[in-house]
Image 1 (cartoon, rainbow, N blue to C red):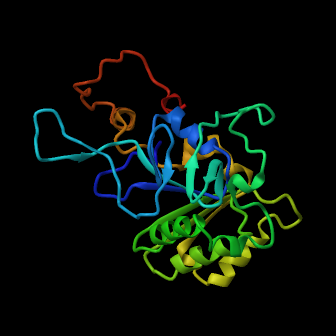
Image 2: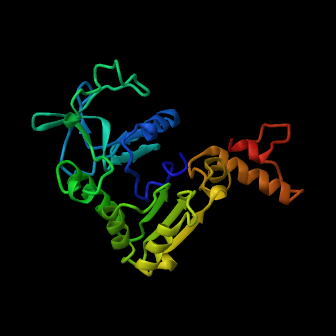
Image 3: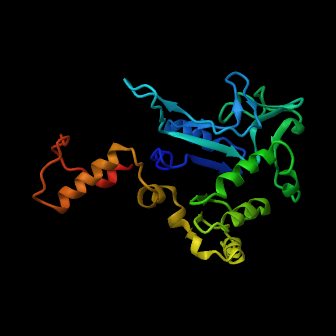
Length: 270
């Protein structure tokens, strides 16, 4: 939510994932975020290859001709396909497969793996990404990452896919870009070996921030101490007011401060 809440002058948050599950979509639903992807339609969404900069705007009450960006909107791309994508002839559809559906009894679970649209872990993944629809998805990834002042955050990515690493390395050739790597590690004797190899290969260490280990990769720690707070969230402004009052004992109370009790700052972001 903190990444999705941003000023209108900044680019929209774009989430890219190599996973084919729907955990990220489920999280967006829980957070109340509106998701924009390449699918068009409500009953039987169809994949579209056109790269239009689709976005959501609204007209403020009483104001005409000045549309504003709607808050809480993210762009979403699944680079390796998804368990709810199906091929129907020459078309690609997204089917209504419920989250946590029974794989043995649900009617939308395909009997033939060929109907699924997913890149399974194998040595030919690099070649498969050149086919439809993955080529379109990776074009979106490359265009979003390789632009001035872009910041890309990886979480849990092991840097084992060369076709993804090439895009990241190409992004870092632009001096104003930055890469943040958050990782627990792969559990081996050298848990971050591939991460360090990537950093050394690119030679752009000044453009890379490493947050490695269980402390930084813990979601609760990230959300509480490291991730930016929502720029449009009134709680963030409330926190600033409380900090000012505690730092300056004689500071006048805020006009909209109606709470009589003390507030634990840590509770504000639980």
